[in-house]
Length: 164
Image (cartoon, rainbow, N blue to C red; front, side, top):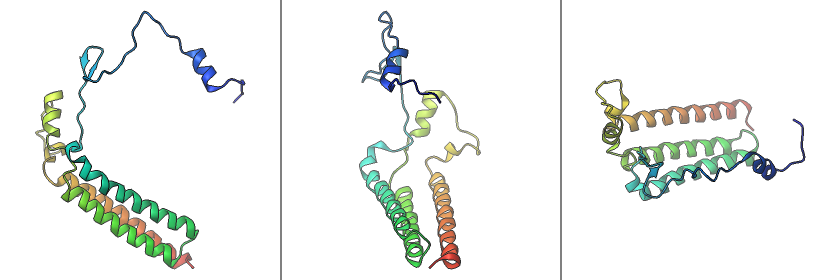
């Protein structure tokens, strides 16, 4: 790649041409874009977001601490294995709390999608037919448990095989 000696600002200024006869497209606070109503549908229950975010941040914090321990240790050891087991258990517990006890999913999501797009969820293959039930949460918890078991199992194996 050849350097031209121009900065990013210079290249942006050279490429952007503003046509004053055409107004810029802006999203106003009333949800209008170019005179058309823009509607967003959240899969999350935003009314309960203040209860959900702390648990979500705890999950990220547990992951962060586990990775810091791995980086500080530098190799597989009993301390890394123990930290991985503890963080894995905490991940599964926090995932269960987040997905089973807290109202994370928007209960009116399928109704809003049906109203907005006119699509009817009638087939058993449509996962959104199960939105109000625990099926979506159970699938996610199963995936999280499988990934956690795989990671913890790999760490235990590598610690026993190569660890100090």
